[in-house]
Every structure is written in structure tokens, then in C-alpha cells.
Length: 235
Image 1 (cartoon, one colour):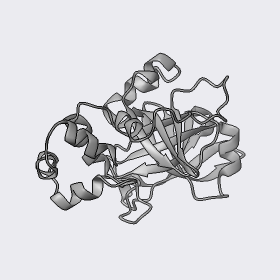
Image 2 (cartoon, helix red, strand yellow):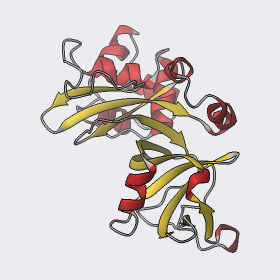
Image 3 (tube, rainbow, N blue to C red):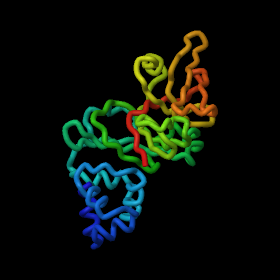
């Protein structure tokens, strides 16, 4: 992230001083200051706080402000995220972030665009984008943590694309996708493994094999919203 070098020099601090401030080694800071560096969210939080910026503002400063927001977005679609083209095949998607402590409030105001627009934002580097609505969610438990590379451990952040109920049914069984489900008084991350046409219920599966995360079924009509997980950030 080249902007780190500029921000650091503006504050007149050395790489060693910045490293000590955010709790990493000098070598780590040297890596972070390179273009396209992959910085864990926990470190981004500390860096952004130190420079009194939001994470999306860090990413925004990383690119030339004259770059155009992705032009193929539907102008009539009410969205709260932004997409910025960095280079061919690389985009910065910045979406409102629903933290665990704010989930109840979100469920009450899920259709309030003003509320969503005022939430903190999280930036994700993605290779391709599609028209739609995107939100970021904090994972609040270890239901999807199996200790493997596909895990979604507690405190990780996922980027979800809003998918219609009809499209969800079409995708079940065709691909191994993970979902954020807004259901009842909770927001949960699950894999949907089956749809029963007779009962019109979906089976929700957790990657964690612990008995407390056993499979269960819910009527699909009771799910307020489905967000297909397309990206994750893990500490």
C-alpha cells in the first residue's frame, strides 16, 4: 500500500516508529508499504486509526482520485457500496460494514439506505464485479470454522452480494457457496446444502463439526435476505 509511505512521511515518522505503534516488525512495515500489499484487517484497523482515517479512505487514497467508479453499475439501483477500478481485472469494492454489536439495529433498518450509507465501510480487492447490492458482515461465532482454508472464523469479515430467493434456490447444489442469512433475530453464516420443494425449507450446514453447530432447516420464506459470500478478510 504505497499511500502508507506518504502518510508516514507526512507525519515525519520512520518505518520503525510506525512498526512499533501498530505492533509489527520493521520488515512487516516494509512489506505493507509495497504496492498491492495484503494487509490483515486487524492491522488495517490500527493503521487507519493511527492516521485518523477509515479503512476505505486508506484504499481511496491508494489510487488516483480521477479514476472512474465502475460504469456498468445500474444507475437506477439504489446501492450503498462503491466500486472503483484500479486496473484491468482489479477493483476496490467498499461496502457498509455490519459489526456483530450492530446486527439487531441492522435488522430493524435493513431497508434504510441513509442508515446504511452512514455505517463504517470495509474495502475488498476483487477481480470482477457484477451489478447488485453489497454489504460486509462480521462473523460472530465459529460455526463456519473448520480450521481449513475455506473457514470463516469468528471476527473475520465477509463481503456478501444480495441474492433473490429465486436465484438462491437455483444455486443450491450447483456450487459450494457460503451465505449470510438475515433470519429471525440473528444474522448467520451458513452453507445451504438442500432445498425441499415440498416443505419449501432450506437446510443450513456449518463447517464446524461440533454438536452445537448441527444442521437445521428453516422455511425459506422466513429468511429476510440472502447475501452470497464472495470475499473474506481474516485477521
